[in-house]
Image 1 (cartoon, one colour):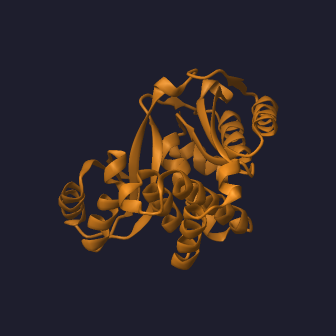
Image 2 (image 1 turned 90 degrees about the vertical axis):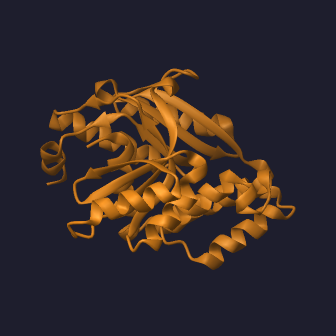
Length: 253
């Protein structure tokens, strides 16, 4: 179970039935507002906005909610101007590298909360550049396997047409990766070919992974990720853990 793809899958499964859905939508809305404020309300000319919209769609945010967030960010919205993007880097249990991206109106508060979360979960917050070199920014689309024998070949063709670089099977899904600017076109091409997209978002993909085969350590890693995600200011959390399926099943059970 690789940190960059399966954590995203876990989040989407949780998000679909989570009681914190309101909080999730608030975070997604904030990201759209800030992106529109900084780069304008036209997604075709604003990659950050385009990607924020794709992520919101992945969590089934209604179109009118997305449109209202864009309109709010495009106008003279004081709330959007108050937020700034902050990135934290650190290490979790088993030496797992972790990147935390936040939108905050109080840098000191957020830094203190993130540092505390790392500390109470056997991790530690590092300085800027501590782990960023272990990741690269990519567009990732998670596609459900149709079960048809020709599915992979059809997906390869559709993904390539949309601008994707790679298609890899991951259990019952496929992971389609691309350059960030091709995320929206890849999703559109895949959906046009009849495939169901479970997730589509800009993410940080690790260049190397750390295997976490011990159940207790796996629990600690997942608990750290979950608690960081639960912070109101945190938008995204990325990590380079690799938990074997058998261990994940045992932890989930």
